[in-house]
Length: 268
Image (cartoon, rainbow, N blue to C red; front, side):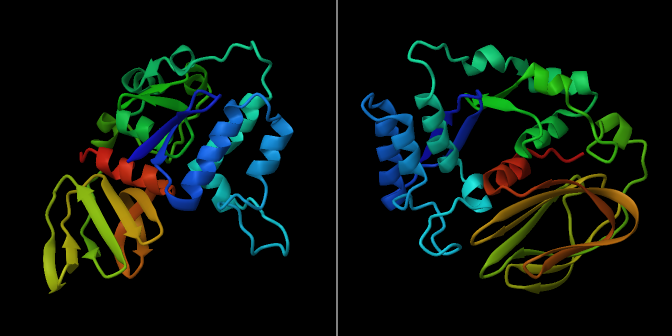
């Protein structure tokens, strides 16, 4: 089960519904945010206090600390948003997501001159602000207008077709006791040289133009997109690897976004 919450910024965050201690604490924060007798200072003390199970109690003796990992947790963003809402004047108007986020992914891709997949990757990586409604992303036109397309980043499909296809890549893919390493590409085949249960060692044949890679372990997921390049590169993850002539053009390190990026990738 997942929870969706729309921040004051208009961005919608989606995350697995917390259970146990964290779930109870988040419910308490949401209730306090609705309670007019609780001040914004009191709510902030609650969110940053020792009762918050998200905070790190080991970094500084006697203190609860919001580390970088805490700030990456969407539940913590919800808690901070509750504090921000408490600070609003009682009758202040809040801009709704559909008022601010009005541009579709195809329109953004056309304006920026990149593929729709590249727009989605920018959303997943947090470089373009967007709100998700009913499974569809809508972007902030101002964010799109100010977005600078990297020359090294994902290119349009017609541009990609002009470049030479990729050469053979050495690879170890599959899944092990603690991690998995999956690839998705247009050739969709694999020349197997050794198989040990669900772990495969072999080669991805030449002729590919873009490959999506998803590495998943017990505590994280990471996503990469690679394209052909001169020289040799190696991409390692928990004992799995890709090796050959490529360069990484997209990386997503946030677990939910990494999984979504791999799911949305369309081989070319």
